[in-house]
Amino acid sequence: MNRPKEIRSTGLIVAGVHLGGPGYPNAERTLMALRESGEVTIREYGHWLPDDFRLWQLARAPLLKRAALIARIVLGNLWSGLRSLIGFWQTGQPVYVPYPAVPLLWLLSWLPRKMRPVLIADAFISLWDSLFIDRGGSGSAKNGFRWLWRLEGRALRSADHVLTDTTANAVYFVSCFGLDPARVRAIPLAVIEPEAIPMRQPAIMLRQKRFRVIYIGTLVPLHGIDCLLRGIEPLLKDGRLEFWIVGDGQESPVVEAFCAAHPGISLQWIRDWQSPAEVSALIQSAHVCLGVFGGGGKAARVLPFKLYMYLAHGRAVITQAAMSLPAGVPSPPVIGIDWKQPEQISSNLLHLLSNPSQREKLEREAEAYFNSYLSNARVVEAWLELLRDIAELQRN
Image 1 (tube, rainbow, N blue to C red):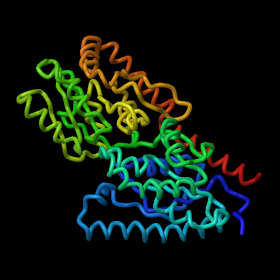
Image 2: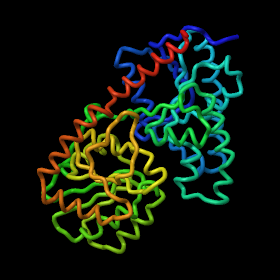
Image 3: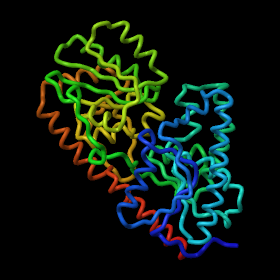
């Protein structure tokens, strides 16, 4: 039995147990944008996990809760896999598996290739990389996660097309898991764009007379919190500036120790989860937004969601110069620094403080850049090209 010979590029089946909500907006916003384009019909044969679900809960939850979560994911993927198989054989439409695609892909990998649907996998961030690298693992920890590396590799190799966010990540997936480079594409991520966010603008979120510098994101080694703090430290007593850190995570003790060592400084730390409206308001209130300073490796392979949001809101950005981008996308209008020289953060902040025209120029360029290269409209264009290519391959 061979796959159907005709793939209708206007249709897409969505399968798997996937993550959505503000924490993982890519798949949800991609499908919303495709629907709104009027070019693609969507059949949802999968299941969205609750908006507040985080993958790290699987590692930290009590044993019984962890078992229940794993059972939910496994059973949900089995049921979704069966439905997507039937849907594919009835319609010939390709199957999109949003992040985390690995569980369903692994299950389908045991079918002969000619019996599988045409699979489009959202690789996004490697599960093995996240669980091992993001937690600073090494040695025995690496060996402990080796089973996940094998599982993820088998799963991704079963996909006809693997989507990732940057060219460097595409190269990483190819080299790490032995993927066919021709099957891997680096396209922009879909985000919650500012105009789609119901705005709330409390007074504290408005731009104040003092120069407001904001960092938003999880406190993990990837983001280089230590570099960021050392970069702003020389300016803590400068009454013209105020600093905000919005986020929590593995590196929170570093921030706690920093605040304890500098009592009475102009530093606000918001640890609670913020809604999209609150994040948007915070970004709008900022004069400068701080990005990622985690150095080489994974930090240099990504363009984080936060940079998408900073650029979408038209804000001046300081981040490390080492970064990667989707295919065909030029360098963004940001101030890039050497992560090994955190003093460049303070010197550039003082420059922007003293040169408002330069900051305003960066703001205009940021918004224009986002609209031209990273907006959801560009995501739709990339998807339509992919679906046309799939249809062409099936006809030949």
